[in-house]
Image 1: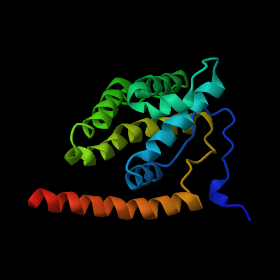
Image 2: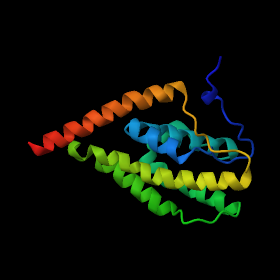
Image 3: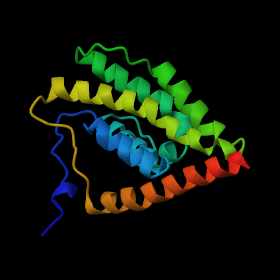
Amino acid sequence: MPDASAVVVPTVGLPFRPISIRKVVILSLATFGAYQIHWFYQNWWAVRLRGRFRVKPLWRSLLFFVFCYPLFLRIKSSAQAHGVTSGFRPIVAGAVCTVFALVWRLDETFWPTVVLTTIPLVAAQREINRLSAVVAPSVEPNDTFSRWQVVGVTIGGLFFALALVATLLVAQL
């Protein structure tokens, strides 16, 4: 029997994939931000499928700290084209994403800042969910976890907790 949570929700007519905020936050934190690469990949792939713009989703997702602003801008433009109004600011989200994605590389003690890149991701996903509610009101944001995601959250969550405790203990020495 196939994993029900792995079934792709039909998104015909949807510019981007609606995903619950809870799922984005949990997967981002438990994977130390690795889920963000997947999130960017999926959304750049949606841009490629939808338009004539021949982007390379793999490179844009691996270098998300460079290409986050253009994606956030496309999300906002698509939302505005469908009459969605909100306080989402692509330039702010892009700047925050870039800064926090690069800060942790300065010194290993800054590694916890990588999880702060989840903040602009959540803002962008909220905009996608608002857009989805207008374009296809019957499609609910994906809130289910596949078996692999559950395994990743479990293992990643344990590693995250251990790393955080170790960082706090070392800081006290």
